[in-house]
Amino acid sequence: MTSSTPASKPQNQPPALASPSLASAPSTGKPWWRRWSEPIVVATVVIALIMGAAAGFQSIKGDIHASEARVHEEVRTSEARLHEEIQASEARLHEEIQTSEAKLHEEIQASEARLTERIRANEVRIQDTEVRLREEIHASEARLTERIQANEIRIQDTEVRLREEIHASEARVNKRIDDLRGEFKEEIGSVNDRLDAMNDKMDLLLETLLASKS
Image (cartoon, rainbow, N blue to C red):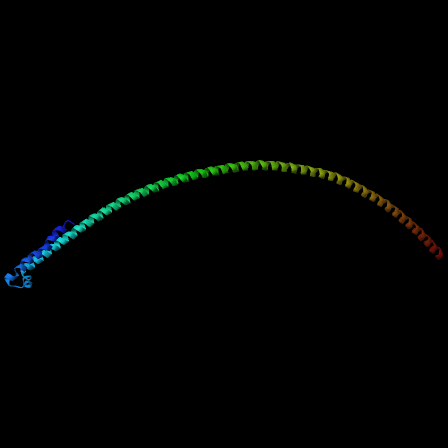
């Protein structure tokens, strides 16, 4: 930016050089367009153009340096801002992690407390269930013992009754046997009497036959 000031001087030089040639045109007697083609004028114009180009190059170079400086400054500013943002983000992340860890720790403690309460409640219910089951088992054993004793009593009564019925049945059978024996004896006696009668008749027949033959 500072090199733009000397660049204006070479640009004003060609008119300054050209003005004497134009002023002296009537004295030399050459037309002005031929005077512009003279070597000194051409050299002056070339030098002025070179100086103007050099001044423009210096100005462009200065602008480039200024742009580079601005870019470097912006890069440094961006890096600083990014560094600050990264640090702030890391700080926020660290705080969030700490907060999350604290919340998780609290939730874990609350969950452990709830689980402990549930375990204790389950243990109490289990103990109550065990007591109730023992009572039910004792009551069931008592009922079964009573039923077994009642069944044993009924079995004993049944055995006594069966024994009595067996004795009565044996007595009836023995009596029936005795009756059958008496009846059989009577029948045998009647059969013997009939046989004796038949023998007597046979003897009479034999005697009658023998008597008729003689």
